[in-house]
Length: 362
Image (cartoon, rainbow, N blue to C red; front, side, top):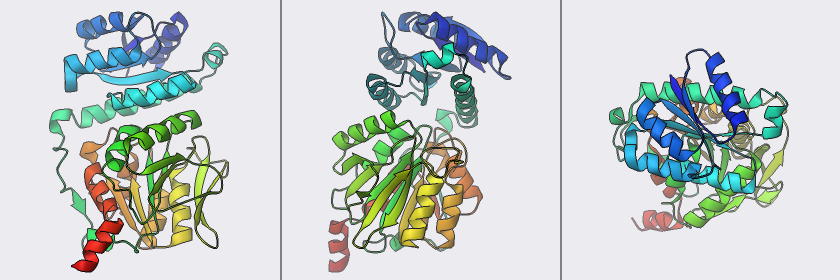
């Protein structure tokens, strides 16, 4: 795997290059000091993956990404953005993923200067997962996005997803998640009869930027979660990054509980916690979807929901940036169906008042 590092900071170029050279299975193809230099070296070196800084002179990361996609399209290397943990950095990182970047790694200059290994460990882990996914399924091998047929559990039908039969929709996603969430939510009508709660693996500032973007793009109201927030039908709540989101029920309605427990959970927010507590609170009246992402977060929660006979959907392999989380659900036998995002969106859309009126009139 050949990696090109594009960053205007000599320190970051040195840190990232060193991590790549010491990681097995990776080769440093070269480095570049800004976007213009980077585009030229991409043409000359044909790397498999590019780490791309966002803030750079001459040509910044967002502009570089636009030019790269316009010039090479699906033949472009995998792009892993490097972003600072600031409001501006979070907004631009969300924008970069909608322009085709596969994921984002946070760079904390003070931490890097102090020798902390968290940044390079995350970078190498994500780089390996993204390249592995690219090698398994090149874009030309992927099914057409409109393809609905993937895999259904014998005897399962979308007809079981009806207004009144679902009390809450819970969704988990990670690597490649933000653009997929937008594709899933944008077609949904504003009159859904159930709330939607999403756990996306990202820091809090990034999940806040994600909620703001989705709220602007969708008919549904999208809010950034807070402890005790009521879950209202027809609204979407994004669990704050760095915390866990759990579903609980008061006397009158569902609410989101945001906190640090369990401390041992690998990811914050934990998809397992979201799905499991939805099942504990609403039993089989849950519709869950586990979308693209590294690792296996969501597999335990999906198993719990499956045992309760709730509906569990998994994103299909051909449309995932990384087929890790959905694969773990499917491998455990806990997915009622494996579907592309637009098909999952169509199933959620069945939970609308207009759909209920249509069914009553039929």
